[in-house]
Amino acid sequence: MTGKQLYHIGFGQDDLGSSPPSIALLSGDPQRSHLIAQTYLQDVRLLSENRGLNSYVGHLSNGRPILSATSGMGAPSLSIIVNELVQVGIRQIIRIGTCGSIQPHVNVGSIVISSAALCRQGAANDIAPVEYPAAADPFLTVALVQAARELNVEYYLGITASVDTFYEGQERTDSANPNLMRSLHGITEEYRRLNILNYEMECGTLFKMAGVYNFAAAAVCGVVAQRTISENVILEQRDIAVKNAIATAVYAAATFE
Figure 1 (cartoon, rainbow, N blue to C red):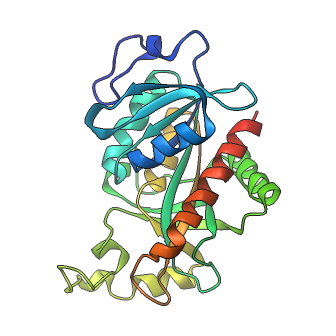
Figure 2 (cartoon, rainbow, N blue to C red):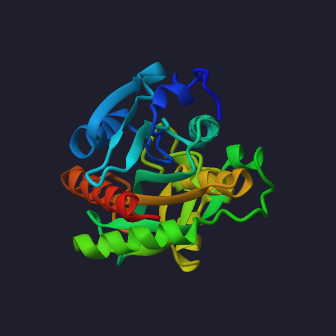
C-alpha cells in the first residue's frame, strides 16, 4: 500500500479515507464509471480525472466502501491501472464491460460472466507466460451468477476470447483494413467450435494479473453485438446490456464476502 499519489490513477491510499475500499468496479469507459458512481454509490467523492481515467469512492447501500474506476480501452491500459489499484489496497476487482457474442444462443442485451479467458494479449505476456491460466476467481464469479439470478437478468457463464484489437483480432473485415492476415481467417468459427461465448479486450490480462498479484478478479460484460449475424454493435440494445451488467456487478459487490 502507498499513501503517495500514483502517476496514472492520480490518487493514493491516503485519499481513500479512514475506511478504504478493498473492492473496485472497473470500467473501460469513463462515462460508465461516472454512471455507476452517480447511480449506485452513496457519499460519492471524485478522486481523480487524470488522463480521463475517472475514479470515484463511496459506499454501497449496505455501507460497504467501494471504488468505481476507469481502465481505459484495451489490456495495456488496464494493466497499468490494475497494478496501481492493487498498490493502494484493492483486493477484489470486477470488470464491467461490453462484448460481442459469437454463439447464436447468446443474445444481444444479455450478459456474459467469464469463468476464464482464451488470452491472446501482448500485455499479459509481460506478466506471465502464455501457458499461465487466465481464470476468474470462482467465488467472485459465483457471486455474479447469483446476482444475475436474483435480478432476473439473462446471463451466460463460460469462456471468453480476450484479444488485443477490436477489428482485426476479432475477424472484422468491415473496416479500414479488410485484408486480414491468413492466421485470422476463420478464427471466430474456430473459437465457436471451442465453445467460447464472446469477444472482448481486457479480461484475459486482468485474470492473469489476479493470479500473479494474488487478488480476486471477475468479469461481466453486456452483449452488444451478435457476431453470428453481423459485425455491428446493436445500439438499440446496448444500453440494456450495459445496465444489466452494471446492476449485476453492483449486487455481487454488495453481497460478496
